[in-house]
Amino acid sequence: MASIRRVGFLGLGIMGTPMALNLAKKGFEVTVWNRSRARADALASQGLSVAATPAELASKVEAFCTCVADPAALREVALGATGLLHGASSGQVYVDFSTVSVPLIEELGAAFGAKGVDVADAPVTGSKSGAEKGTLVIMTGCSEATLARATPIFQALGEKVVHCGALGAGTQVKLAGNALIAAMLQAFSEGLLLTKKAGVDPRKFIEVVQASGFRSPYFDFKGQALLKRDFATHFSIDLMHKDLSLVLDNAASHRVPMPTASSLRSTYELARAAGKGAMDITAVITAFEALTGTVIE
Ligand code: NAP
Picture 1 (spheres, rainbow, N blue to C red):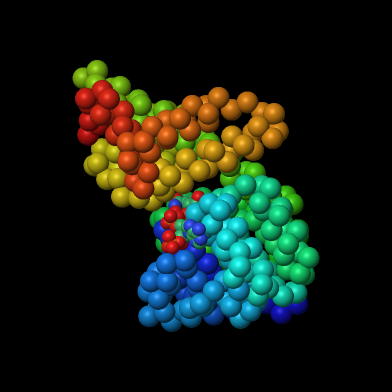
Picture 2 (cartoon, rainbow, N blue to C red):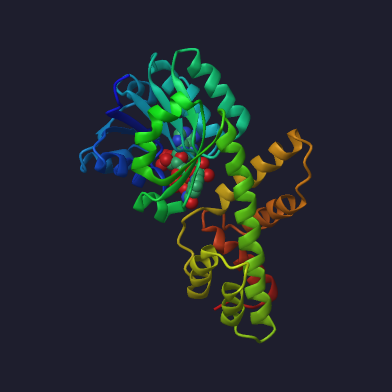
């Protein structure tokens, strides 16, 4: 089968915009679509084509990719009245990079598979800077044959691809991973707040953590942001709340208790109730700063 040259990209948010641009930089002929047209038009000036609807986009390309906010958004873009399915045809490849539920991925696999489209779920980690630099870690669920066809797309966007298993396996790993990230960040932020409130320089807490066996590059990145009060959004509180809800539904379906994720969802709900949903996940701790009258810096 001929290699893929014409690629569509739908969902031009924090992740999707740099991913679409990286595909174009790596030589693919890229057509984009976004619900808010302005974000797509902004890429037209950089040589990318813009489609009027997802269905129109699907009719023009050999492979199409989605990276939208949540399951409702993906359902609309893929299966809605002007969705991708209406323009899809046999022999195409569909890669979804969004973080959604395993049942939705399976539903897409059945709907697009019935039209002869090869489907892969391929959620990512690496956030905004990984998307910009093309260094994402991609965890995919698909057949070996689909993996081979999608690999040039993956190589344009990421530095590591982990083939997790059959369709849905990438999403399964992603949900477990995001529960871990939320727990790491919350415990780290609480440690900073506690040392500060107790009158010890929170930088000493970071120094010890990062000299220890439980150090992480994530703590360097997020520690600096917290100390500088830099809450520019890389990954929003609303989206992590969505992921914690997805992982808890997933865990319930497998009868696996996840008390840490359960508590974290309430913590993120608290931040959303304080009007912080669009802020970066580092800003969750500002709700606790307000309660304790202490600011980490
Ligand atoms: P974002 O900046 O909030 O962008 C969300 C995108 O989804 C936008 O293009 C938005 O369109 C679109 N969208 C929302 N609702 C829609 C609907 N009903 N119909 C059609 N399109 C809709 O989000 P992001 O940070 O790029 O994240 C995108 C996906 O990647 C999410 O599933 C997220 O969990 C996952 N992810 C994010 C990160 C990260 O660090 N940011 C890392 C890994 C994975 P508009 O422009 O019209 O609003």
